[in-house]
Length: 174
Length: 174
Image 1 (cartoon, rainbow over the protein chains, first blue to last red):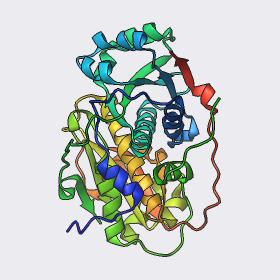
Image 2 (image 1 turned 180 degrees about the horizontal axis):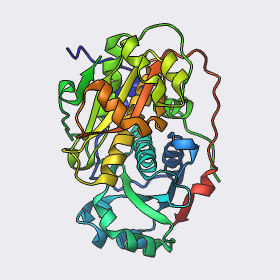
Image 3 (image 1 turned 90 degrees about the horizontal axis):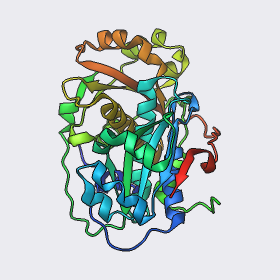
């Protein structure tokens, strides 16, 4: 029933994007980091409240402080830039919808990074260390950590990933 | 400080996508609806748990039953297809991260629709009628309504949208 896949550059990006966890030594130009964040901000949000906030961590010494905060310290170590993403509690209007908006924002960032030849991965396990992340960056409690996006140039592109069949996730057709 | 925007087809789609609320009479082929959902499923999710579930509502009589469930009944009326998106409570592992994954999934759907020449809008206000949506579709309580994506061919493309300056949303650079 699923038919063949249609193709265009946007669908290509959506289907070929992978979580990239190993990076080359090549640095990322600040212009590209800005573009990834800009792409994030063009996600939709409820009432267009744009609750997302971003930090940019590229200083190696400060980046190193993130390593003990997650079991994925090797990813942090290899990444050239970390972008901790926060939700601003003062901008929120409905927790579920605001968290969804943050997810849409991060997906834009991952697709933008991929389209620019970068590799990125969405780190969620580090949320257990939200307080330490805020402390390292000197940020207030109003900012709730939502994820850290780690980026660099991909060391390779041989990741595979799997998804359920569409029939397993389509629960009604009327 | 923000520099000029970089351009490629993915960034173009991210920046030019708008919430489309008015549609022509042209029907949407089932193949395109399937592709939009497939694109949604290629979002990342924590532990790759893929908690998203979808319904496809194209029957005009059933679609009409959604009209009283939201103040945006005119959008429902004009749309050719509704895709209610749910989170499967049995697949969830961390509410915040699962809601984010749903948001990433919906953003993929919106970008895919845009790339296929369709117009779509993410309806969140209808969550107040989650029980009625489940009842109309005969779905169990295990499925929590996350949003309804309404789609059709755009009646026009003159929507504008605004975003905060990047300096307002970047809270730290180190």
